Image: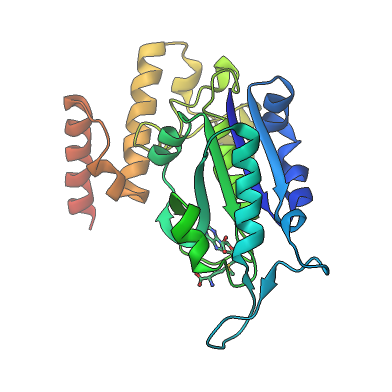
Length: 249
Ligand code: SAM
């Protein structure tokens, strides 16, 4: 079973999310182990401080190296080995579904959440294996990014999603955005569900969905098409879209 340990100053914030819904159920069913470790428990400061002002001056506070290192060392001792440690950071490589898929194959993962102005650089040099960002914007702490990463990994683990919630067809997994989806009622505000979805003709429905996925990706994220797995039928359909686009524009 995969084990994820989140090293954070706000374990309750993480727990409040991790106990809910699909991930919460997966934990209860023993499909994934997720623990939160409070970095503050490892400070040697009698006032419980874990941060200090930056050398050289400047605004804000920096998380100190010792509590983080001691927290990590106690984790290594508990699990008897070094987990793969990811520091959630706006300076890291932006997370992709491909990276999520690769990380979901590891046995042990530890996620370090920064706060304030970030962590002392020596933490990164000494113990961090990889820095991951969840996007080109800055948050107040690494907890939300760690939860994003945990959620995206957990749902790929065997048994976590029911068979009818399979992730293989979803946006990004196949390199394309997903086709549009509908459920009851059939008509809402004069908008009807596309007739083909009611036809019961599975091959035609598959074809329609594939074309809508290609169309969406072409319109919204054409950059994804460069790495998507496309067959000759897909390519012919995309050529048609490009021609129509040229004529329209
Ligand atoms: N001073 C840092 C910098 O400019 O790179 C930013 C620190 S940020 C205010 C505080 C913490 O939030 C970081 O240590 C990191 O753990 C987390 N964080 C903020 N934005 C993030 C993002 N886009 N992806 C991942 N983690 C992020």
